[in-house]
Image (cartoon, rainbow, N blue to C red):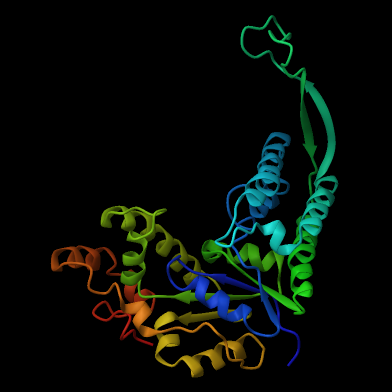
Length: 328
């Protein structure tokens, strides 16, 4: 088969995105970027910059987007470590990461200058009170891209350098990146990487809710978790109902189906990714998906079922059946 396209993994969170990204990355032709890079779609990332230097451009909006991206790429990303203590720069190559980020700025900045800094504390006019006050601060004039595709090409170059280089280091021709909320920004991901395959892994919404309740970063009460998840489902379903996915490389799978027939579903998954089947160390197991099914009492479950009443069938599930019997 020809070399596969890059892969983005998406989902609601707690739906199996990490597991399926591991599986895809265990294929001999696909390298998984081992942690969520986050700078594609999260606030302050590439998506925000693309809008700020094109459709939403003014010098203030553009400079703010550049300042936030600089913080993202030079502070937040290098400062976050995975379970093994690794950072994204370490995972893609520190030198490669540093050079790629440095090369980005001249391509998106039209001019840089120093602005006199206002006095802080008990100052006198523009003079700082103490000897260590900054006399000026750095400002930039962002480039305006009348042709959005020119900016997208620059951002694509950053991605190719970082992820393509990491894949090449691993001896593989392409890469897989996983961030759950890729789910809500598929149009931008396909604009950036038109040939990409996006894998959306689903899990019964009741199981997704139950798993969110156990996470330290999510609300721990049912009403809070519903408030967190319902808009995600609403946005996704509204987008999908309006989108034409027939011409896109889009793969939608259920975690429950993968667990029910792992070898067959794995074979089908890899076929849709354009690669031959391969045995992987990671798998999907029904017991792992069903272990939270009975955690709600009857009253709480009734409240949840009412809240998820329209979402469950829209996602392809039956409310009365969860991990061990999802509809197909």
